[in-house]
Image 1 (tube, rainbow, N blue to C red):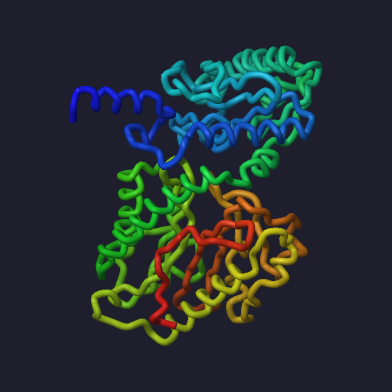
Image 2: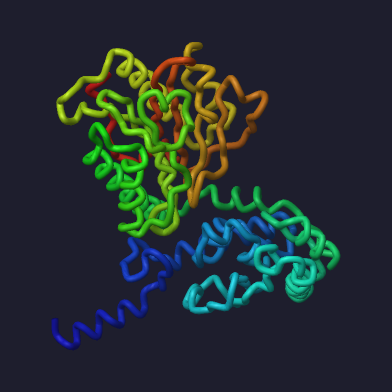
Length: 423
């Protein structure tokens, strides 16, 4: 490379949208500033539609959505210590848990960086009420300065102490969690590119898991491989520990343990992986230990369970499409046989983005008690769920597929194969 070419390359890096966190020093597959602008506009449009002066978001996913700033998100989720205030007509102020402004350098959606006056108990003990008043004073000043006389704000996660301090400032508090989830529900084309990058990392992790699956490996050790690959490829964390084998697969939702996986065990898992760029990849697959090595074949019962789960997934993907209502899709989904009904998964399908998100589509058996209506629109990303296990049976099969609602139907985001030779 010539000196001139080297300088051009350096200039190109300098002009590229700044990345922070796990993917720094890599080349993004799309323009991150376009993504950031789209997401902030979605939030602001929702705030404007709700007649709010602004939104106060402590949920780290909403803070990430608004600013793309990352700082110890899992740790900060434990404490009321990091948030963003989005003025509907005015600046975006990121309140971080300490004064580290370099963590928001060159993020176009962050107009001002402040260290929050910490008021959570671990940090300040009994001085919380004194400190939270300082925070409420700052929010009140922003509302008065940029709200145009409007004192209504949307908030997601705040403690009773913080809510009381804000109300003492004559600020009217309203639900911001639903507002943010609705804003996050429709992905831009650029977001879908980042979500695909996350899925690619997830599927690489799955391939490496399968390569080490052999009798004697513990559930924890097998699951650790997915974590390792995710971190190595720039992912961020995994939301759950949902991998189990043999008799621990039924009923579902036992998290992985020190149990060694035995020859012939069904192994089911659900990724729930927060990958590169903070986007979630949520798919499930099921294997039988020893099949790949030719040491064993799946039993007739394992094949039967797998075939039913596969049938449910494929059928329910076929019910989705733009313009369909949640109720319409629910009523047209696969009818779960009575022997599997009591162990059915908690939802039929759900949205996904920075994590599991709105909407949650209930099974036919649960819709009247728990369901709600809405409409599928292009840009929604959905995860279609199945768990098949007989009540009292030895094993169960967990499958899940991630799809995008398009203008004409659906497209699959995941390409990792199913065990179709078992069908």
